[in-house]
Image 1 (cartoon, helix red, strand yellow):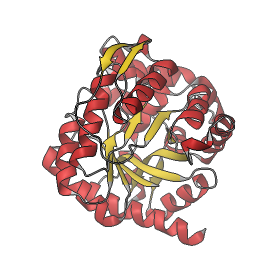
Image 2: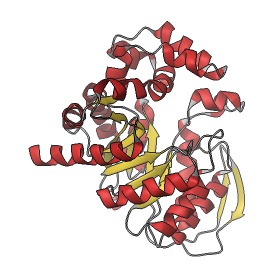
Image 3: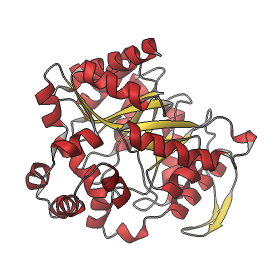
Length: 328
């Protein structure tokens, strides 16, 4: 997998241009991120479905708390229909800093994610569903056929979420950019894959990486600060310990993000955090980082910020990925 994440903080027309560029550059999957404070991802996906031909499209990563899971399933099914069977679903527990602002942080959990996509799969198969668990649905169904298979990628980084993905999903979008983290993730998903029925097919572990690539290494690293701040704020203590990052500083970043003091939060990001939580630098730097990660992962999703110049960075990141294939 070579995927791309587009964040709808930009105008929809610009996102469509970037998505069509990504298809031309050889990306096979395109995820549109889901945060209440940005543009609606499904509006963007509808436009992309009309303007692209081959690339797979879906939300990444949606959570099952802001939308009823049956409604989420219907929206993804609509993307699949509009794109001629190219839909996919990235689903996970959501960003804690963002969900805190909606009063939903306490609802995050593995069971709700699993139940949401299992019910979605039943609906996509044309079944009517009654469900009583982390959410309720009575005789729910879709009144249209869903073309093609809709792969489900779980977004997460905790051990139980990784193992659940290995057993039940088509893949894991592991929120990591460092080979040590992907090596750990591979160990976790392999535990889940041991209990995976053969009928579920192959499983893919993808590094859902914060990438910032530019011919100007300093500019690339500076552009990585905002997403790294969000990642550091949500990182579990063992992850922070693995990279020698001060937990109190990461907590301070999270508090400032929740308070809307973004500039202050980004200013607290350290070089060590950028090294741990992003692939940032020149194309050669990023190619080396991708190559190290691909010792453990099956693919890379190029995530925010992509780079200080989005159009240039989409091209440079694809070239960096292709160079790792030549090396391997």
